[in-house]
Length: 209
Ligand code: TMP
Image (cartoon, rainbow, N blue to C red; front, side, top):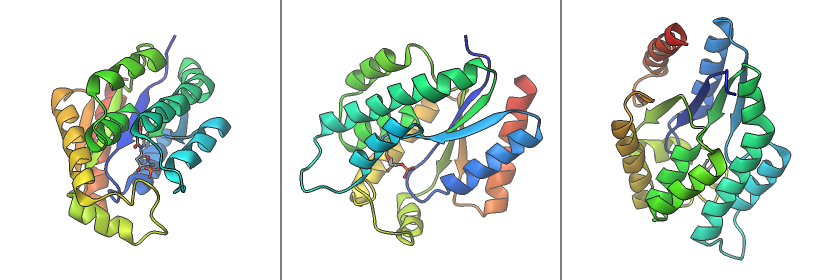
């Protein structure tokens, strides 16, 4: 029995998810909500170990099917150990990426069939999905430029430009298909404007919670 609100944050590399996740958590906490922040893939000991397999480079290449199955294995663990219990106890869960990322990266980037992802989504989530999703949108060019200033690229960050164009396209299509769930934020603006936009959406969410 879900009581809390489930909010996810999405976007391609370099859109500023980390900074804005902290901002959202602080804003909701100040508004009196009990908030937990978490991330995918990851969020539990076992799911974080799966994350390492997914993100690290290895001499053995990871197949697309293994990749999508591991994403959902991590998610099943995360849902059971962290997300469902928190929501059931009335907490608000703020998650850095969730299943929209699987549609975008594995579906768009790797070309895993959407119907296969949908089946896994039903199997693992059993009807639980985010109440709201903040999509930080930015051109791939700018995002990759921003992300390039970070440390060694992981397995996903090492992908080509075209891969991220597919990822972005799927995110935007999903946002268009579910306008009530998605808040699309233009992440090319300065941080003050981005956060002003986010704040407006959060006020709306708080008003209707
Ligand atoms: P992060 O860099 O935002 O922590 O995310 C880790 C990477 O995992 C990122 O490149 C996107 C990727 N990812 C997927 O490919 N599919 C998924 O379902 C999730 C949650 C993340």
